[in-house]
Image (tube, rainbow, N blue to C red):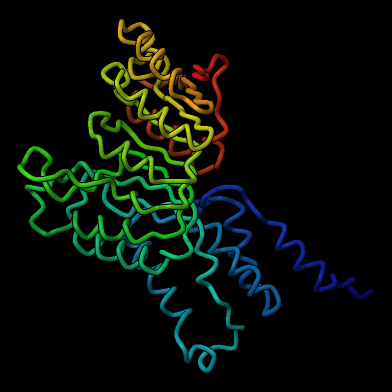
Length: 338
């Protein structure tokens, strides 16, 4: 008895239904294995599967993976590829919409080839990349020690992004200064100042005392959610009017995250004598609603207190990769309105 054949339309529909919400899936994920296998089944499944592979599985966690990705993109875009391969030609560039980027060694960015490859990759993706999560130790190399000019190259790499809507920096506030801020001269604006489509922004331990941070927020018309991990709230009572000014454009949601029992959440500010006067000044100038959600990250029993910082960073990174960081809400949000 012959084995019944699945109609091609149904088979393609099954492949197209594999639509994970993750920014990027790791190579070990069963969905990644499935998609990769489908690229090898037949000429029929190849186009749909290869588009899905580049849309959902760009997990770059080493310089070697970064180098191989660049080589594969180059090979897929070669004009004479049709003459050398029997596989259908597929336009890959529009599929490059999500990326997890952690190509540097764990402790340093002092690596010029990896910095150059990062620039080349983001140059290719600058008009298509929508969701980006990075885990890069940008504070491992400060401007005075940057003898290879790695930092200017990385800054140029991120500044060229045009369509980014969702961005998470795991370890810092996307610290890409090329001049030491304590030296004479103007401070450099954030590298994300030109991301006009940005809707969601997650930063670690950002500096409230830099006015260019708030000035840049005012020029991001689409920004609707900011996730700030271990931000220095107690020293930042003066930031309320700046966030209030931004909230005049549209509703603004702020997530303040730290490990449970940590002293880096917005709730630490409510005990400050500056809290009430600052709150009242905001109420008088706010046009729409500003919501602040304190989020406490529970430490597992096996995590030592000294590892709380790393655990908090990884927790935020993983939630951002899954796509559910932005929907977090506290049971008792701090609401400031007219």
